[in-house]
Length: 108
Image 1 (tube, one colour):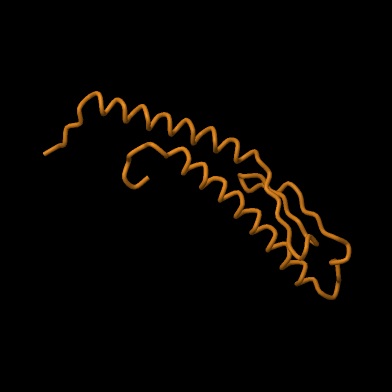
Image 2 (image 1 turned 60 degrees about the horizontal axis):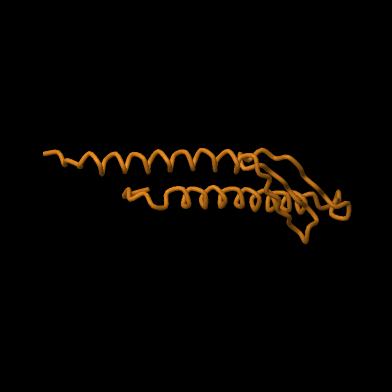
């Protein structure tokens, strides 16, 4: 047995879903082009990436370049990269939440 949705409700719901899709597409484009920067080690290392996770810049303060402690520099780079990635992910999550508001679809 199939549930029947009145035509007017079904059309209204489809319109809301289409609007949500348009909002998501626009938000995704903006987020992918936006740059997110994070630093580690008291700004000793910073990483900038775009929302599509393409790294666009890495800045390293000369005082943290110690040939005897390469591991620390590697750890700082990893921390900065992970934080910048998290910022981009949070922006995408926020855009999805904003776009789906008002659309009563379970599971979205």
